[in-house]
Length: 57
Image (cartoon, rainbow, N blue to C red; front, side, top):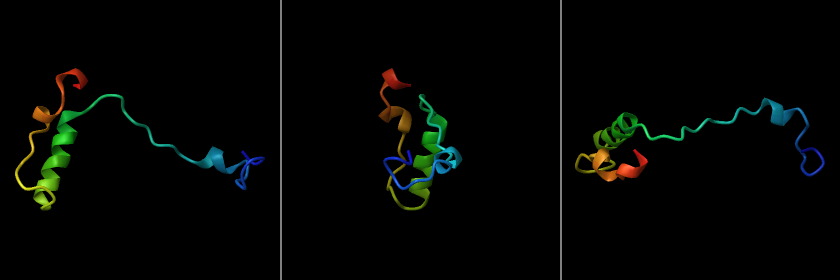
């Protein structure tokens, strides 16, 4: 890393990368949609289960 950037050799070891799940959590996704409605970002309530294809559930 230090040879191609101005980043120290120690810095990449200290960076914490996020972990992304490979599966959808429909409960959490619905909660997000409900919060969007609550805060006025969306109008009507979204039924996320009806929006997510069966193949990716």
